[in-house]
Image (spheres, rainbow, N blue to C red):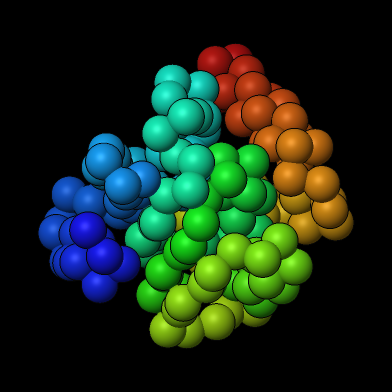
Length: 143
């Protein structure tokens, strides 16, 4: 499957992200970094050297893709920070529109996940920061 073929998955309503590693196809309808957190926990070996299409990519998702060791990415919308980061990490990158940052759900500021890693350089450190932030948010919701 080529990147062009993989792009067609983004036309489906139930696919936000798709990953193809040469033999396995993974798709997810989860928004944000959720698919990446799940896949890095459950099947990281299926992500290595994969081509990826993802509807929206911020720096948090970009860092997780670097941890996953993907080969190439296409996204319709990407943040400036994610573009810089992926280029620095030598990930083949194709996109349609660059935005200053990924907005939060209320569209009144930066996505909390992107804000968590905005000043982080190391992808593995960013991954740990994101896991901690997710845990904090889950604890806050349960109170």
